[in-house]
Structure formats: C-alpha cells, structure tokens
Image (cartoon, rainbow, N blue to C red; front, top):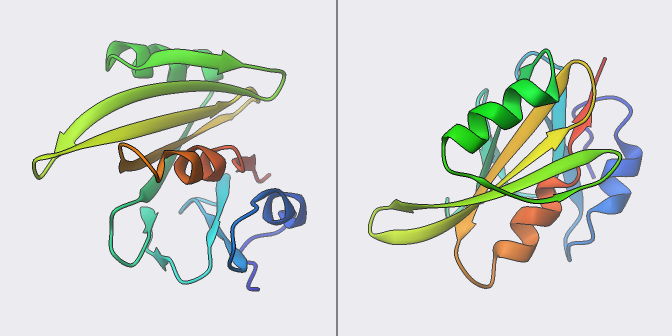
Length: 137
C-alpha cells in the first residue's frame, strides 16, 4: 500500500475494494481521494489502467459555489449528509453513456471529486471512490 498524501489512513480503510489502495492528492494538495492500487495518476486526474473509470478534483471557497456549478451542468442532487453533497449526471464519451458522480465536501475550503464510469456495473465503485474525498490542510 502506498500513501501519497498525509492523514488519509481512514480514507484508505473506507475504500473496500479487492486490491490494496493508494491515495491520490489533488495537484495543489488540498483535495484527495483513495483509488485502487495500479491506477495511473497524473497531475490532473487518476484513471483505471483501461481508462474506463477516472476521477478529477477541484477546490473552491465554499461547497455552495461548487454545487451551483454542478447544478448548472445538469447534475441532480441525490444525497446529502453532514460531510458530503452527492450529485449525479450522465454524459456520452466515445459513443458510451457514462455516469458521473460529483461528491462535494461540506468544508471550507470545499473540494469536489468528479468520478466518471460507464453506466452499469462500475457505478458502485465510482461512487465509493468519490466518498473517500478528503480535504488536506
């Protein structure tokens, strides 16, 4: 197991995938998610080796600012708790219909993890990755 950011042991433990996990920090160090071991990590996103699931992140001063942007892009709010607001949308890339999970932290500053996967079997993993979102101070 490789940890590429600090304070993410809880996020690593929370991701219950069959392989070991590693943490992917957002390029400025404020946002991080946990992805399965073996994913390809770049400065702007992490992707499964076959590139069928990927995650990108951004930060903003407030969660309301991010939610307004996501709602403007036709995402639908599907849940909210004390830590996260979860929105979902669909998009077509290369002739495939993809599901996009937008997990927004209710912190200040706020982070969003946009996780894209093919509609169907991989959606649960995509949402699970998004729910490991952590703000690193």
